[in-house]
Structures are given as structure tokens and as C-alpha cells.
Length: 309
Image (tube, rainbow, N blue to C red):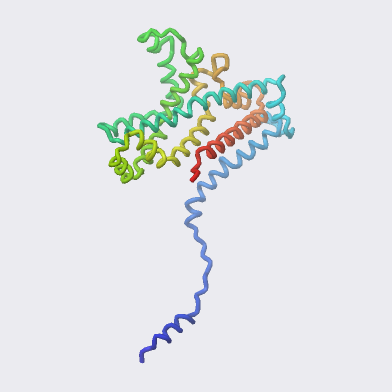
């Protein structure tokens, strides 16, 4: 005998609920675990130990001696100390490099990506050529440019009759470092912008064409707002990378002339691992202060460039 509609509803209503068993899902741990372990061992623990060392007097061989904020006081307020002048000069030179290089490392690849996104002839070849320097090691790049800019055997004097030693005179030394950095590092940002521009709504661009909008109007009103998150990401990441400048001045100018291109990381490395007795505690204190500067500047960029909608 067939069940009535009411009986079926009652059976469904009073059907005993299956107990929910807690099941461990190991798949997320399998994907995240290795990276997390590497992050903890090679980044988190050394970073925390480095912060602790900033509050100690340590020469890498004896036990660290806790001195509180003495290292920070010496670096920031003791004008008679060499570390005071080192920190001021190194941080000033680092900021000079960041201020003049970051805008070009963001704007130049953005313009190149905009041009390549129009898919001109041989655009894939030019895309590969522009990205190619990013694949080279910093040492190889600096050796090449040191040869090109050398007054003794480079082409500047022999072919262009330029008799100024670019790498040992200002402002040419800074111009050389910034130009080489832009040439070396624009490939990564250019690829990010290319992918972002290709994701901009074609319907909006076609509608703008029908309304008679020009290239500049479409670029500033549609393309730029459409890739604002990618611009924010590349600006912050590029700024962090430029604050950590080390290889370019070390290999191209050696910090000269007269330490005018000697950045803070060169002083930190020299004090900790250079000639003479290591002053690892003071170097760690300088590194902590540099990290604080990076965090402040990055937070400021997030506030300025964040979406206000």
C-alpha cells in the first residue's frame, strides 16, 4: 500500500540525524607545511634572534652580552660615535636611491606594458628582450655595466669621447646606479602589468571608443583604475626591494666617491662580517632600524594608495 504524502514528510522530518564525525584533513597541511617549516627555520627564528642580538654586545664568537637599548642610543644620539655618522650617511644614501629609483621602476614598466598590450608587430620578441635582464645575476649585470661605464676601457671615452669618470664622480655615480637598476629590474613589474591590463574589461574600452574617448582618457579613466591593486602591490614590493639595495653600489662604485653611494646595508655587512672585530650587535641594531623604516614607508604607501571606495 503506497504511503501518503503526509507519512513521507513525517519520516523525513523524524529521520535520525547522522552524527558529525570530526575528520582530520591533512591536505592543507601537506601543501602549507613544507613552506611553513622553511619559513620558521630560515626566516622567523633568524629574524627573532637578530632582534635579540640588537640588544646585545656580540662579536660572533663569545656569548652575547645584553646591553638593553645602548646600541640604539649610540646609533641615534651619540654624535661622537662613528656608528652615528655611519647610520646617518647610510640611511640618507639609501633614501636617495629609493626616492629616485622607485618611481621609474613602477612607471617605466607600466608604460612598456601599455605599449605591448596593444600587440604591435614583434611584441612577443620585445617582451622577451625587456624581461631578459631580470634573469641575470646581480654580479653578472654589474660586471657588464662596469665595463661599459669604465673610463679606461669602456666605449664612453673610446667611441663617444666622454672624458668624465662616471663611476667616481657625482651625480653620475648615482645616475649610473639608478639606470642600471631600472634596466635590470623592470621585467618583473612589466609582466605583472601586462597580465593586469589584459584583464581590463574590453566592453568598457569598446564603449569608451563608441563615446569618442581618446587614448589618454581610456588609460587614465579605465586602465589605471582597473589595475590599481597590481600597481599598489608592485609599488610596495619595489620599495621594499630598493631599501635592501646592496649589490649595485658595492660592485659598481664600491660606495664611492667619498662614501656618497655607500648605503646602509654596506655598513651593516661591514660591521658584522668585514675586517677587524665583528660588531654584530651594533649591525643588528642598524638592521632593526632599517626594518622599522621599511615598515613605516610601506604602511604609508598602503594608506595613500588603498581603495577608498
